[in-house]
Amino acid sequence: MGSVLVIGAGFMGAGIGQVCAQAGYRVHLMDIKATALDKALSDIRWSLEKLGNKGLLKDPPQTILGRITPEQELNSAAKVEWVIEAALEIEDLKLKIFQELDSLASPETPLATNTSTIPITRIARATQHPERVIGLHFFGPVPLLSLVEVIKGKKTSPELFERGVAFVQSLGKTPVQVQKDIPGFVMNRIFCAALREAVDLIAKGVATPEDVDTGMRLGYGWNAGPFEITDNAGLDTWALVGQSMKALGEEDLVFRSDLIERMVKEGRLGRKVGKGFYQYTPEGKRLPWRSEDQSGV
Ligand SMILES: NC(=O)c1ccc[n+]([C@@H]2O[C@H](COP(=O)([O-])OP(=O)(O)OC[C@H]3O[C@@H](n4cnc5c(N)ncnc54)[C@H](O)[C@@H]3O)[C@@H](O)[C@H]2O)c1
Image (tube, rainbow, N blue to C red):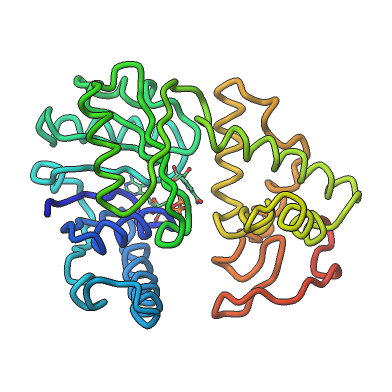
């Protein structure tokens, strides 16, 4: 098996690193913050133990963990078979990272981004070799959700697109191919529109987040409602997704109310901090809905 550099060890980067290691790849997990790396390794250990106890791992958790090396520099880009960027959803930051990767990695090394919104073609502008840039859009929690959008930028080579699909399959994931490179791709355009309506409805007091989520689960067969999904992903990430979609001229798909931005300012970032639309125990178990916790929603 080859090796992968994953950039950003947050909610997504940790999950991507974990599934690559589970599939047998050696993983260089890079973040600028040592605290993020520590948290990522402890989250991965916790997740592997749970999966191991359910008999869902091919190798013991310790073996899988042993394949992951935490790092604070990008230098491993020079020696890996794949690079996957999963840092914050800020275009300038991604451009800077890709510019640096372009000078470190050999021109044959595929550079993938896990961006939620930014067209791959825009990110590829930061490189001299746009044909080796591709979108691999994982869904979180990555160890549990099997979908990965594989996105072709205008200049992504057909060979790389095929390799991207095969790489996703090698992780035991299911690729959905996105042939046209537009903001938000396929899944996030659909989810943004749903979240826009859901946020507007609760901001107007038409229904509670819990009732909207229950409705979407029971009425449309979603296995989590829009507020459950947003709490899991992080409200800070969704605020950045909204800002990015607006900057890309897609304001029609973005929530009109400033509710999510206000909740971020109040520190209600979702499951990772114990409160978002819902409240959670320190172990991450969701507490029963209490409307008095939601003042301001
Ligand atoms: N949260 C989701 O459900 C989800 C789903 C699909 C895609 N995404 C996308 O994945 C990316 C990461 O999202 P997330 O939710 O994991 O965010 P996060 O905030 O949990 O993690 C981002 C990490 O990137 C690190 N970082 C910042 N600057 C960096 C740099 N220059 N080099 C290396 N690391 C750096 C941060 O320290 C942080 O640990 C974003 O582009 C997001 O839009 C998120």
